[in-house]
Image 1 (spheres, rainbow, N blue to C red):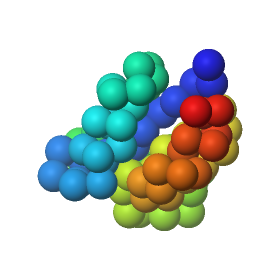
Image 2 (image 1 turned 45 degrees about the vertical axis):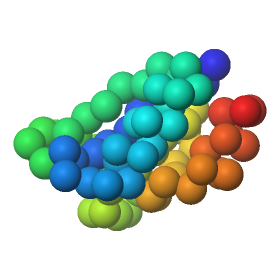
Image 3 (image 1 turned 90 degrees about the horizontal axis):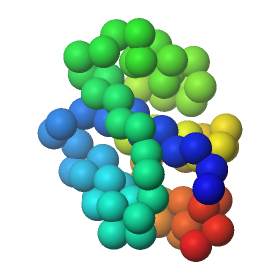
Image 4 (image 1 turned 180 degrees about the vertical axis):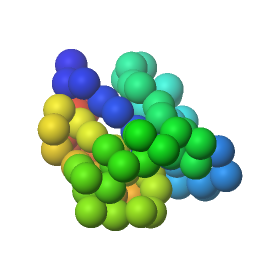
Length: 77
């Protein structure tokens, strides 16, 4: 399975939806709280050019926001 990283904040509704989706599908992921981790926030912006969350990195492919169809496609689900 591809490496999955999600850049999120605790109050982001779409971040919770994305993580719930990953959990339901058994997808392992790394979660970084960009509200408190400034280095990861910079990494997220460098990868995506965006400040909005979630930013999801699936094997080097960047998805801004939670688009279930795109995420499923990238994961081969």
